[in-house]
Each structure stands twice: as structure tokens, then as C-alpha cells.
Image (cartoon, helix red, strand yellow):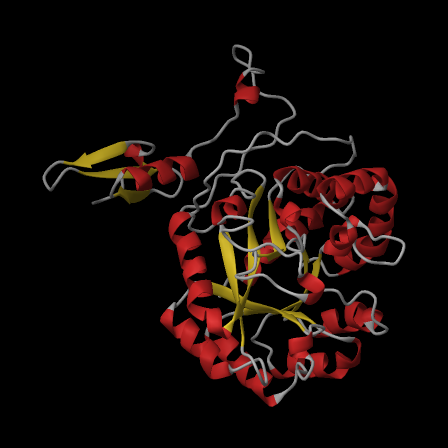
Length: 399
């Protein structure tokens, strides 16, 4: 079928075949085959201008909507199960970022009950359902997340099937990150990881989080032979590698950044280490394959230095303390991060690091985290805001 610009914006029927329908994109002069109703709907949602009811109500005859931002269309292939209510702001922070966001640090509910430090973590489809997770994201505000699956090797099939199920029901919403941990012995077995990735090509976009402070990683250093073998596999599969290193691993981190320039490494929780300034001031300049997620500490800490998101007793305790400390926390975090992010505008990502308790996935909590984050992003240089909010995360997924 030949694309003709005079048919731009129209749906054409190819009657000489089997009644196929084609939409002619007037911008790129391309014909989009609409094989069924679902594809037709996605094409119209992606290419349509988009407007909200509250904006329609403001339009007078011959007028336009003043002071509104254009709505960014949902990418083709992304499916959201819920239509959330508009964000109801609690505070009136200005400036305020109103664009898209992508959560660059999000933990999926666990596959079974945990013990020890993370005993309060919810279980998938018991405490928090797959639909609950997908409903936290939507087309016009927070579009999705880098979601980390902690999968013990004995639950490999269950974990991979969970990722497959979400991708089938809500394609494009979650950017799946595999973490396959073997017990007992050394927890990273590259051949097992490679086998999973080969069996489900393209399902997983990253690997991690390597939380190297956890007991089962106590014998692991980022530069171990098995880890280096794994990085070769990550490069082959174009995986982002997410890592939480330790104080004593400064040299090992720099070695892997140097030796694997084609692997994109995403770090977090290094700001309190003695070598934090070296990483932020030197390593980010030296290694363009190094990225950093500013996440759970962004929302404040208690008197012991533990993040509010982890130390709160329950949902209401978190909401109360978070609101009480809102402005003080915001001012402190802007002072801590603004210069660093603006100095390296292409290497920082926004995230939440949710996952320690079921209430972390509550929509009311999510709305507060989003509003606060928008106030934080609004304090950044306008040229940096979209990069930190979502574009740097998206660029990590590109080949």
C-alpha cells in the first residue's frame, strides 16, 4: 500500500483483499496496519492529541486551554489496567514538575515469606497482586518502573512465569529486572542466568538489584571471576546491571566500570560512603557507563539515619511523619543532590525503592511520593528535569 499525504489522518480499507484497515499517519506519512480492535485502539491513543475532561470544560468558543501542558501519548504496546484519578496535591510547592516520570528503582513483591531484615516484605499475589503493581503506573504521570525480582533458584520457574504473566497482561508497563540467587554456595551462577535469558529473549531488561549487604552476598565482590563472567553475559543480552555496593568495594567497582565499558551499571545507596565524592566527582566523569539512582533516601530519614520508608510502623505512621517533615526534607535533599544531578545530567535517575512492606504499594502512599518527587524535580535546572524524571531511564534500555 502506498502512503499518500492527502489521506493523512484517515483510516483506509483495503477492500480488494480481506477488508484490512490502515491508518495513515499525517506526520510521518506512514501506513499503520490495524490487524484488530486492540491495535486500532493503541494507534489512536498513541497518535491522537489527547485531552482531559477538566481541560474541555475550560475551552470557550474559539479559545484554547491556557496554562496546560500537552499530554504525552502512551507508547504503542503499553497496557495499563487502571485509570487513576487526577493527582490531588497536598502541598503547593513551586516550582513543580508536571511531566512524565519513570520509577528507576522498584521492588516486586517477594515470591515467598522472608525472614530477617526484610520479614515485612509482601508476597506476590498474596499481599499484593500483579494487577495492584501494574495499577501504580499509568500513561500520563508515572509510566512504569525498573522492577527488581528477587528469585531464589528453587523458585526460578515461578519467578519467570510471574514476569511473563505481567508482560502478557500489561505489556510494556514493567521493565523486568532478573535476580536469580542460588543457595547454598556462591549465589551468582552465570550459566543458570544465561539459560533463563536465552529461554525468554527480551523479557528481562536488566539484572539486579545486587544488594551486596545481604547475608547471601557476603562472599561476593563486584570484581570476582564469576561476576566478571556474568558481566559478559549481561553485555550479550544488553542488560542494565543494578548494584548496591559496600564501603570496601571502591576499587572493585572502578575496575568493572573500566573493564566492561559496554555494560551499563546502575548504582544506588553510595552517598554515605567515604568515597562518595570520588564516585560523584570523578567516576561519573570518567565512566559514562555509570548511572546512579536517587531513591529511598530522597524521602527523608529518621533520627537514626534509617529511611522513613523503612522505619515507619505502618502506612499512617509514614504519611504523618512524611507530611510533618515535608519542607525540611525537601530543602535538605535539594541541597544534597541538585548540584550533583545538574553536573551529570545524563547519569542520574529518579526512583522510590519501594518494597519493604505492603503499604509501600498503596496508591495514597504512591501519590505522596509522586507529588514530593515532582516538587524535588521542579527545583532542578529545567534542562535537566525530564532527563532525571524519565529520559535517562529510557536511554538505559536502548541498544
